[in-house]
Length: 382
Image (cartoon, rainbow, N blue to C red; front, side):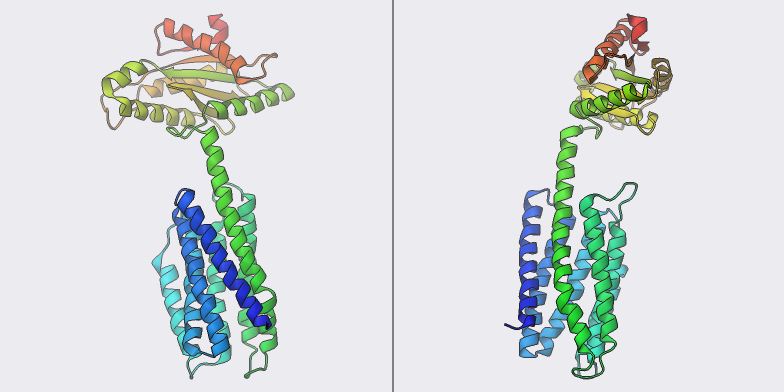
C-alpha cells in the first residue's frame, strides 16, 4: 500500500468518525446550530477525500475539481460554525465571494491552461486565510479561554500555518516532478496529524460546552439566570472562608417581594415570573464585581456583599428598595412592586450559608412585621 493510500484512508476515516460524532452530539445534546454546521463540514469532507482518492488513482480532472470544491466548502462550513458558536454574525460576503473566487480559480488551475503551481497554491491560500480568520473568531469575549477552546485555537493556527507552507512550497514547483518533494512532505507528514487534531479538538470543544451547560444547570436558576440555592451555598462557603482568612467584613441580604402570592393569584404566574426576573436584574445591576446574587427559592433572594459591613449593605439595599417601586412589567404595566430586606453580618462562628441566613431571615421577618417595604439589620432586630 502506497503512502498516498494510507494518508487518504486516514483522512477519509477521520471525516467519517467526525461526521458521526458531531451528528450524535447535535441530535442528543441540544441541537445547537454550530454543531450541525460542523457535522455538514465533515460530511462534505467524506465526499472530498473520496474524490481526492479517485482523482489520484484514476488521474481524473473532474474528480480533482470535486476535491477542490469540497475543500473550499468544508473549510467555509468550519468557519461558519465557529462564528455561530461565538455568537458572531456570518457575513455572506466574507465567505461566499472568496469561496466563489477560489472555486473558479481552481477550475482554471486544473484546466489545460492552468499549472501545477497554481493548483497547489489557490486552495491552500484560501483555506489558510479562512482558518486564520476562524481562529480569531474563536477568541472569547470578556472571559479567558477554556482548555478545549485553547487547544482548538492552537490547532487552527497550526492548520493555517501548514496551509501557508503548502502554498509557499507549491510556488517552487517548476515541472511535472521538480519541486514537488517539499509539497508532498508537508502534505503527507503534517496535514493528516493536523486534520485529525482539528477534529478531536472540535469534539472536545463541544464536550466542554456541554459540561459547562450541565454545570450551569446544576448551579443556576433557569428562570432568572442567577445562582440557585446550591450555587449560592457554594459561593457563600468560599466567601466566608476568604473573609475569615483575611479578617474582612461580609454581609448577606435576604430579600423577597412583598405580597408575591397575592400578585400571582391576581395577575397570574406569568406576571409573577416577570416580577422575579425584573427584581433579579435589579439586584445584579446594583452589585459590584465579586458580589453574589442568588435565588433561594420562590420569591426569596440572597445577596452576598464582600468587604461590606451590615450598615454599608443597608445603604446599598436602600437604593434597591426605592428602585424596586419604579420597576415596570410589560404584561402588567400598572403593577407596582415592593420588597423587604433582612441583613446580617458575618460572625466568627459562621461556616455556611445557613449560619448567615438564620440571622438575616430573622431580620427579614422583623421588617415584614413592621409593615414591609423596608430594610432591617439583624442586630437591630435582636
